[in-house]
Image (cartoon, rainbow over all chains, first blue to last red; front, side):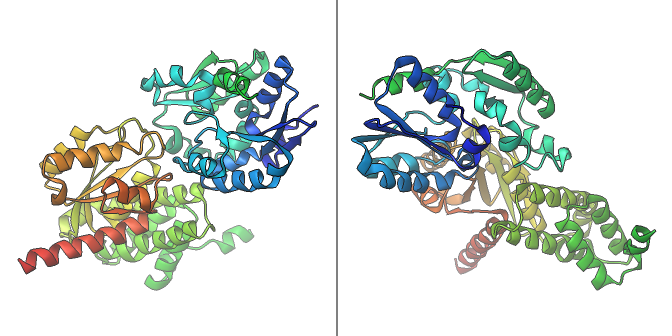
Length: 210
Length: 234
């Protein structure tokens, strides 16, 4: 099934095939979840994605997740939330505990793709701006336009003046994405680094869902 | 040309019209027009403090209200702030010369591990506009830097900012250290940043959480008023 990135950003998606467990995920993770699922033949998992653009308003994530859990609860033996804390300041974790569903550990997807332990091991990277495969593809929708840089490029240094480098955390080997990520760095006036992560803690977390 | 015919000549407006036009220009983030408006009002004999409060701060207050109400978004607020900064740059040396009222002194900075300063800069600017002296420590501040600055500057207020949920707990480290040193109650502590809320502010022992720059200014004024009342009551 071909997933449309714009749809994942704006509307989310439902990929169901009679699985017992529902993965309730951020739209920004859909491709990666499906890749891990397919590689392992995990047919017991269905996937429902909320719009990735919810990330622009982290305070809305817990309630959006709660609504989706309630909507799908009767159809599955278990629901697992594939979000990290994602800027909710612990509120998503509290909501998941209240709902009795599990969620991915870590502060955000940049952390769990690299592996939470490995990511925490370089706190010196506070001036790094991270992009994943999805965010490279959706750079204009997630970064450039919401920040008004399409209309007011002069604002760039007010946003990014304290950053030094863009780190592209590559989930896949894709020269086109690499080139696009490097161009994103150039547009933001930042140094560029590509770091292959694969699926990191996402894959190990999904492996535990039986 | 229609555009030329429609162009507003700021120097041809009377004072009231010019101030209203400056509010519009601030709203639209027109830095050069704001700088020109400030110069015109000064040439007409306005006190720098009046230019600051009636033209710039009043204009930014409208911007702040529309941001809070979801009419304006961050890019527009940044453009307006940039325009106000242009006007402030002209007024600041004059305000120092003319002895504008000083409401209090604030040390402000983004906490350790965090490099985000947009909100912090907005608060600092609006505090200055409201008559506070502001000592800006910049980004990525360790507890020692805050405490040294509070003492050295003989400040009234500590302002701490964070954008990340991973860095906001550091505010508690700073406050706990101040408690251990027995200096916590010597200062008003205000905290802010996108992932914070009132509950967090209370939990870490701050005096108040301020959701935006306008609230920070009003909260700071309120606490300074109480402080003066306490001092005069002793």
